[in-house]
Image (cartoon, rainbow, N blue to C red; front, side):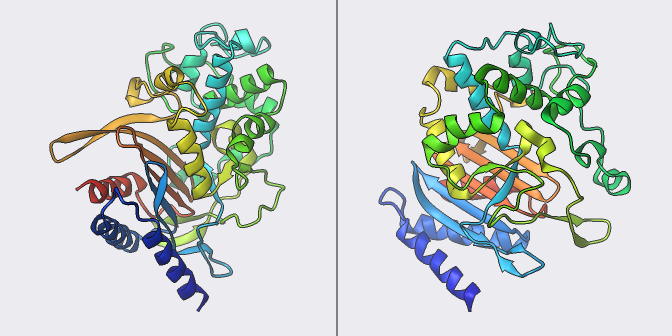
Length: 363
């Protein structure tokens, strides 16, 4: 009965959220498309869609806590994984706007005690764009390897200083600025730069500069020691065994400024509205963030385009993935539409899901 009432409440929300500028027939098509794809691909989690800042769809699917059969709800909190990097990028760019940081300044400029090989060559720009040339801190190359051997540097508790020295101060393996290599270590360095320049912890800077001003009361940093109310546990589908398992044990703290946040769909939408509405950054600074470089990556976001019919639509995409944590912030830049997908399983390709939803919304 509880599940039935919950679904009815969500259905009412979708109808009441319809906007005059978006035909009811299109909203119905959107509902049908999302429902069918979610069922076919076993989506567990919450989806929120906004058109010009107004919610037109908000619904949850599946189970948040499998041990107690707790259904996912719109207020469920999720591990948002690397969506955290978008927040880190904004904090860095705010310091840039304040004249406290030069995007072309090197790591050594801001962290004089940094011992990595690239201290005087790797710039803040390189860190933001994953072009540092530094050896990647994540050495596990497959999930099978992780299941067999564990993921050592996430399964031992480290301070952020230890993360910096052990895993984000490595030798260079390619020329600085020439190769895109997605590396959590670069955003650990950015987190430490934020702490150095603000004189506060990363968490404090995040709260004071983004979360509190935007009223993001359901968001924050995760720590292994803390029990977070309404936080969905994460589960991983092992393809080789065809079973859902608990995520490998890990200290979420160790993802730090690269991936340790939690949030809700509504809070991520607040962040997106403020970011793309130039409420967090000046327009010219936002343009820097949205300028695609190698691998179509800007500052913490992929900037791409999708073709629907004969028209190209520019997108800003921020994916997050840590084992079962599977998230996506997807924004259509030219039409101001935002999609938030937050899931606690790895069963669904959220990029493909977002494209399917985009076609339903536009066609």
